[in-house]
Image (cartoon, rainbow, N blue to C red):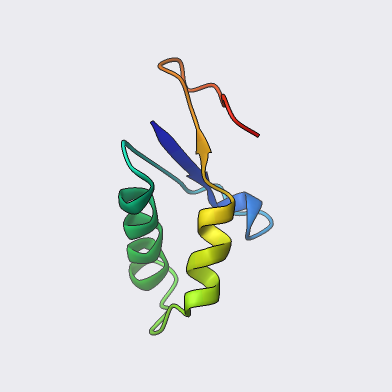
Length: 66
């Protein structure tokens, strides 16, 4: 599993996305930015910053890669 914690990019944010693939985590994060945060355009550099912060997690939700 993969996970993105938005607080690693936006201080104070507590939203997170978990999915089997990095692509799905990114899709969910971008969708969240558009729907909940009102972003109309998500720049490629923001997508890269999200990707840099995605970690692998085990079945217990613990991070397995730093």
